[in-house]
Length: 115
Image 1 (tube, rainbow, N blue to C red):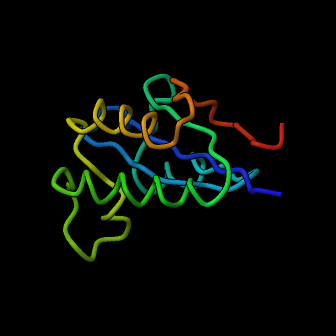
Image 2 (spheres, rainbow, N blue to C red):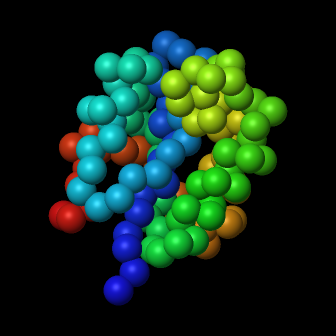
């Protein structure tokens, strides 16, 4: 049985950056992330539900391809996951193309993949 993952692109309110990441079933990443990075704009953020190891491959590929848009210095916590908001449309397009799953606009802060 393949594991289910959510690849997410979080857009932060009043900030000029996005966060790309992945989480497994039932984890509430927004509540974990907001104290560190700021309030998430759940209407502008998006996600895709992807099965199996392809999810990890897609997330890693996104981070590599978008590396020129990184806004954090090497060594800062999470620096490989934070990008300029200028990369948002490219990230969405790449997520949909490479995951072969629809990208869903908006994220419920209480989202559980078990639901």
